[in-house]
Image (spheres, rainbow, N blue to C red):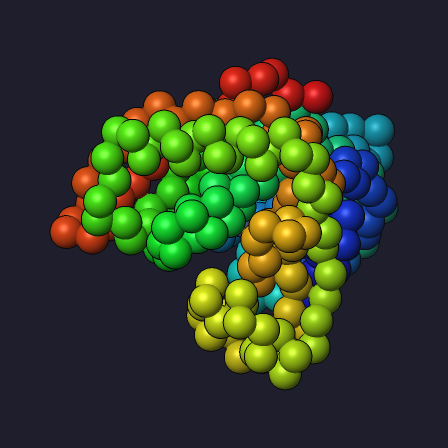
Amino acid sequence: MAATELLYLADSYLRQFEARVVKLEEHSVVLDRTAFFPRGGGQMADRGQLLAEGRTFPVIAVEKRGDEVHHTVDGPLPSPGSRVKGQLDWEHRFQMMRTHSALHVLCGVIFQRYAAQVTGCQMYPDRARMDFTLADLTPERVREIERLTNDAIDEGYPIRVRFLPRREANLMPELIRTKINLVPPQVDPVRIVEIVGLDVQADGGTHVANTLEIGPIEIVKTENKGRENRRLEIRLLREGS
Ligand SMILES: [Zn+2]
């Protein structure tokens, strides 16, 4: 196994990097390091390209298998051992960062206002949906959640990423609430994404550095997903970059 160093964990804004090809499989390339986000935690995978030997190799899918990140390339693969330059489709990635951070703001607002727990989420470049347990989701409440979320975004909260030793993370009430026990026990340190003063979660995704980068959101849809579960769909109102 050739573990891939995950550059995006420390720097979500890294959109270009250099790496070495350590393994090839049928249609995929494993690098020693990557800024490409493999799909996971409701966030879509990055796309982009690898440049090597004067050629361009389009990356159409990215997936984590064990400790390796597999970049699926459309067409022939670069040579084993070669040096490549990776370039992300930044427009797509930045949209994912904005929608992902928007969901965390929503999560913080819904918990602070209603003590409701999030049970799942899925992001797309321009919209996202979140499931949570709040049986009494009236239209008035939906409008209130939308207003409180936009107020919080407008507040300009910094979003910080840090790494905490597992034994410390296990004791943080906010992390217990957001189910740190679902993070595999061998993960240590734990990556923490904190919207300082609003929301804290153990999270492996990429985020903007300040809520102002999200811009205003709109709740476009609500759905009942069982007796207690409700789904909200949000849309970003401002164009990215
Ligand atoms: Zn997240």
